[in-house]
Length: 315
Image (cartoon, rainbow, N blue to C red; front, side, top):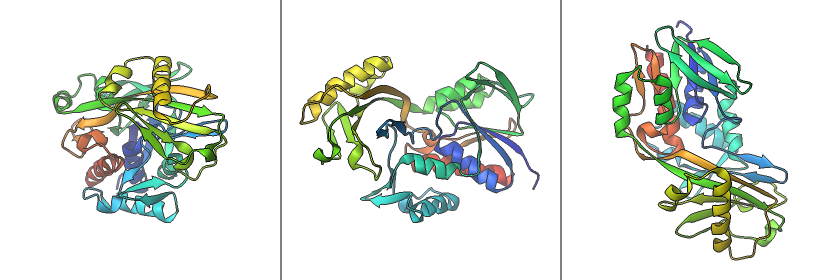
């Protein structure tokens, strides 16, 4: 096998597991991600005395996922055996934090965080990336993998692959807003795991995973159609709107929060998928993967990335 230089844009679940499969097969793989943290929607935020899981925090039973390749099944099975995830009803959840699962995926991978892909030159096989200090770097590749939401992928490709633009008409994404709050209240006085109404769902972080937290930590996610009205606001407005909803949902009075933050998941969920596991343009040496290709769950993302990697390995 000839070693290839492979660049993966996006270190969410599909990008991480695509990169992991290719790395273990002997290729030179570099993942780049614009975020401060990797994992995509497997997102954890830590502050003093508080931990929040404001993205996806559970996955379907991988034992029952018909499209999950053997490599993916073995990854999740080892995660269960190593007590990183555990079964809970029809789902699997992290034992301590989703960040543990992300770290497990990222083991032995070369990842450059805090840099954003800005310009792609298919003819020269180069991608320009911009760092937080505004410095730019041109990276060459043999194969490029794009593992980000479809609208962002379209921006990077910039009309250089007509067939991809045509595919996007099949895909529809859904947005979600979230807000994170901690309070100087005794967590042991709240026994529920969640509260909800027709507008929002509230997760009581203290009662979900085995991670010690000194403060009462509540994460609020919007539901449709309320989400569409909220997500277009800036993060401060989201925070204020969702605090009002939170106050209406929980059955106890809330003091001023010790920490508060708003978040927008502009491409949080797949409403209508592409209907394919991945896309690979052999002439251009560009592959595209993500949960939006075939579904909307963490396992769909994993399957998409791994199947793309295995297509590349076939040559």
